[in-house]
Image (cartoon, rainbow, N blue to C red; front, side, top):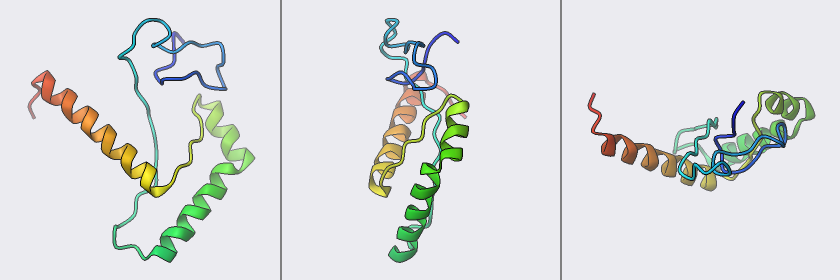
Length: 103
């Protein structure tokens, strides 16, 4: 591997620099996964799902498997995740718009 796409080094490859460290300040890319639900989902069910996911993402075997793939577990609140999804959408929307790509 040459470098990490993210903004910081990851624990599973501590000696692998980021592209930013190599002088490519605008190279940043993440592959992420999240759990989505209907906006009308009752709050108690949302809370139960969030707690179950948080517990699962702390399980040593889950963390080990994710880290073995060169990724890291990042658990966040529904509000933080929503903000991240919106920011990613805007970033890629603007990139596509600037590129002039058309369907």
